[in-house]
Image (cartoon, rainbow, N blue to C red):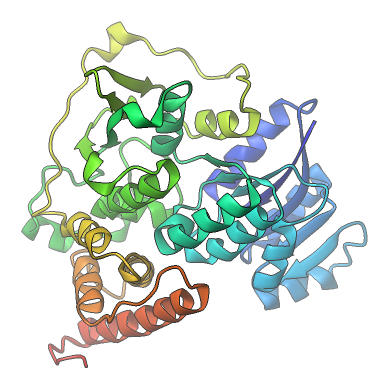
Length: 392
């Protein structure tokens, strides 16, 4: 029996993880849950799963939950609560499915306490990859990737020698606007951007997929997870999303991980590793599938991918700044404050003003993030007002 904590239990990954756990009650038990502010869903999960401890990151929402007199569960709040839950003594696996760089500190807390980390929060690696790897090396804790692309690479690397890896190939669906020009994207609505053709995901990651920045973030994550140089990681558009990623080896052989477009598969593998459990999904029918196609990403129409790759090359605190600026821009787009094509403009403007610093220092990293968020908000306000004034 594995005792599990789910950080982000009301989100897409968290809900699908609970679905997996409920199918194997003899193998998994939920010890703790955490949400941002969705206490309605959390209350239902408390009643059904009976965790020992829960965390509500939003202080006001946490107070409301406490007022409802949940006497059988301990209730914590804030970032400190998330860190405490990630290090809870009885826990074997911490599934970090939080959205955004708020997941970094709980990631570090889980690793410091020696927990196995099932990582679905890619921003932990994008913003703080150097720190995460240092802490992991010190503690010896395992990181099992949950993102479909990195989970696929992880599976392809089982039993292989790191020294024989020639290249990682990360696949991308191309999102809902594949084939459109940048000019055609100016009129895109929030509803259109959230209509992903292949995957069912939360709103933030769905927008990231639509702008293609998600692939840039995944390149950063792959670099840190698998200790592979950036120049050996390639992004390829694969509209069918059947091949989740590939690994090429020195002898020219390529391993590809194929499967249904359902996040429960990589979630289940991360929770059950090194074992495999039966899946409720149907097997792939290659005859019905017919064909698999591939193409290069369109960086001209989707410049966010290029900005992400630029941040990788620049290094230091640039990836953290890129990530923070993107989070602010996506939130503004979802709130209908800016256009879809303003998202890359906010990122570019913010990065152009950044003075880089040491990415291995948590305090400096958090300061860089705060600066990037404030700067991005300035750019967003100028976009809203239609001003083209210079931002110092």
